[in-house]
Image (cartoon, rainbow, N blue to C red; front, side, top):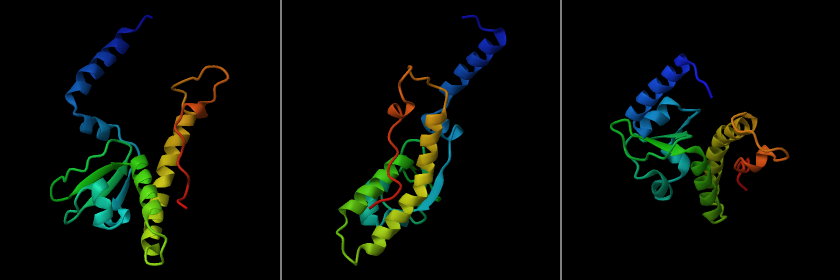
Length: 155
């Protein structure tokens, strides 16, 4: 395969620049959609702490498509969580809660957070189905290659 000098120059510049970035910087440089949430959207601290870490004075949770980064980051305590992992956490917590009248407001709050995250994951799923990056072999559905999208609501 022949490459033009301009293309090879651009590729070599890209290869020189990317190793200088840390994985966090690379993830934020090519970030997709994100959603800013409150710590309380994941339930009380006793419920959310295993997933988000201990609550800070002004904790903000950002759901995005990268890796989880729950290390407190200065005065503006921002925790980065993966969208799909957040949805799985919320679904598991709703299923673990006893079905009592006292727990219904908490269950509803977790469902609302899940419903806010769902469009982000659905858009990512649709983008993966519509992308031409990978051409499946003839007769193979692209839906077989893409992970299943979670259900639109928690029951």
